[in-house]
Image (cartoon, rainbow, N blue to C red):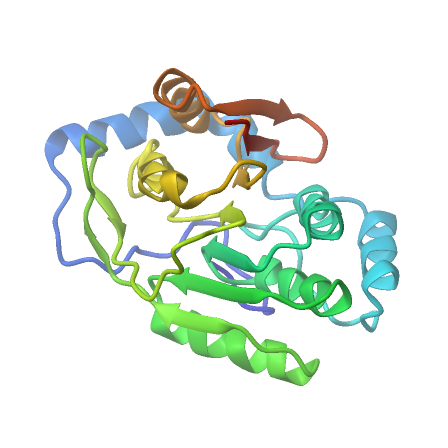
Length: 245
């Protein structure tokens, strides 16, 4: 959930009117204390040569991704997205958390037969900025501001109020909401898993962090029809889920 501009050290406030409980505050503090090595490592956007290779691969100008790092997707995730689109040729891509990954996904789709990209973020100004960023490069996506509302099922705290979803999602990219909402906040993305066909793919960013590892364990128990593997390349790790039946 980042524009092309440099972002601050701390994630932005999530923008929901719902106040966290004392228990929620404590678990965020606890996981922050446990996970600080991963959080610190995630502030790197990857090596310059990997970014240059990514831009060349997509035919984007050298200044198209001026500020990777901080809370933006790193180059390993961005290369993984391009790899997946080249392999899968998805008709429908849904992204949770707009920003650098939106630009890369839109460009990769344009180079590989097209496809519909729906991107959601809780911050309306980020959505607007991302749309302008894509337009600079002749790209477009269906961008939606999705406020955070009470999470479904037994997941804690908040989740995106997502609408306008296709019946089938071939590729699901999860890069939000931020962990400061709750360390397990991205787990609620499983409400979309039934929309993935056999061969459909889930990419969860920041998967090496302790909170996302808990999410991954729960998903493995609940979704035996998916295979989940942790890709440890890059600075933050990516959980790759493939629907196998």
